[in-house]
Amino acid sequence: MSQKEKAQTFRELHKKKELLILPNAWDVPSARIFENTGFPAVATSSAGMMVSLGYQDGETISKEEFLSALNRIARVLSIPLSADIVGGFGETPEEVGRFAGQVIQAGAVGVNIEDFSHATKKLHPVELQLQKIKAIRNQADLLDIPIVINARTDALRFAEGEDKMQEAISRAKAYRDEGRADCVYPMGLVDHDSISRFVRELDFFPVNVMVRKGLPSIPELQKLGVKRISFGPTASYAAMGLLKRISNDLLEKQDFQGLVEGAISIDELNSLAIPRS
Amino acid sequence: MSQKEKAQTFRELHKKKELLILPNAWDVPSARIFENTGFPAVATSSAGMMVSLGYQDGETISKEEFLSALNRIARVLSIPLSADIVGGFGETPEEVGRFAGQVIQAGAVGVNIEDFSHATKKLHPVELQLQKIKAIRNQADLLDIPIVINARTDALRFAEGEDKMQEAISRAKAYRDEGRADCVYPMGLVDHDSISRFVRELDFFPVNVMVRKGLPSIPELQKLGVKRISFGPTASYAAMGLLKRISNDLLEKQDFQGLVEGAISIDELNSLAIPRS
Image (cartoon, each protein chain N blue to C red):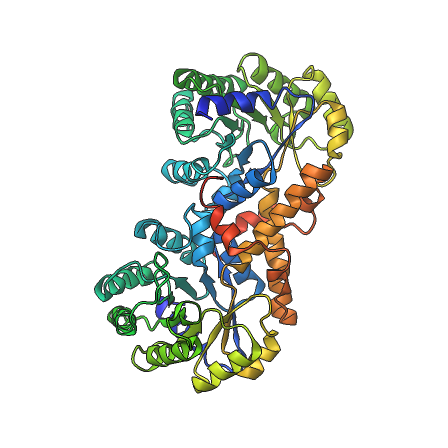
């Protein structure tokens, strides 16, 4: 598949009757495991990828190191890869557009972009965010790669004023209508009724929710009209949780069974470093 | 702790009555989890680290990328870090010595060095391997960092001739006596009787064994006089095995519980990117 075909394939996955289960990887082998087990596409987790490289979630990593890490994953995957680009690594729409172009050139066919500042925990003005989303779309058009833009809003967490839900809905509609986003992602949308309201207010436009405790089951989400569920950093949380349990068993009971039970082999690990044959 | 103090601390861990349980990490958060849970030192796994960066185990990664990955881990750890440097990334003792100097400057206070070629699966001549080990020691002396050299032999796998065990013992003795190694590591030493023989033949000099199925329990290993047990790439195998199970549950049962049960939090994940406070 060419990159353009991957982008088209990824777009189509948002238009199916079944919701898209999108696993977020943090490095090469985690991405390849998701491909091998049968997911139709893979995304990166910003927190997972940043922390694995020694940076806290956000934009403290350099653009160069981010793009290298993304490209390492892209070049071994045969299925579409979407990149979490945090806030776009730029203050201005021009900077964000330029960075999105580099992200596409590194191999991504989708991006997540956030509408808040990690430093101040404040939402960006909606007009500025729309300019950034449009700049990403323009770059994708220039490169002729029809990427999927997943516009995340953190209004449910950081909106000023009392009606955070209304602000999240209003922003999502703007990102959909004026920003030409393909999917919207209200961070913190968890309970059944709120999800139902949000999806209906958006007229069943693709909505992304993230795996977390308390989220309705996948069949329920599908009934509600959710089109995409992503892991966020939860695969990293689960893997690190496993390492903690293994470590405690070793240190407290001198028991190393957790390292050998349910493990893959050296040949399988090595096979994850190269494209699927 | 200064790097020199870390090296001295790491040396002392090989001289205790209790065997050293040495976990091998593949990236920053896996190393920090091992530190947080209470291990006194951490090592890298060559296969784990290489594959996480998109390279098969061996020396196909560039020296620069290897050293960057090592340094990312070293700069967030407060405890000693040992580096698996495969065959030393050089054909000659001079090249291996120079690389070992860079590995120490990247923050390591211990190295593993192998005595075979990944490409040909043949053992290097023992005299050449001794020169490489000596070159590493000389570099460490020049930098005044008393690193722990763990000299691995793959004679049990790749020795020519019938008595592979005798060749492994003979090489281990040479690495100990002439190479001034601090620990020897016969890859493939698994069963109780072979371990017992090997440790006695080496006069209870520190011997490293790797976690694997069929290995005696840690209390048994300690009775046999083994001084160090390392994970090798098994933590990567276990983490990837977990991702496979989680993926299968999601794809076959639409069940995401594996991502949220026993997981760590976002704050804990982020905390792993910075030194322990």
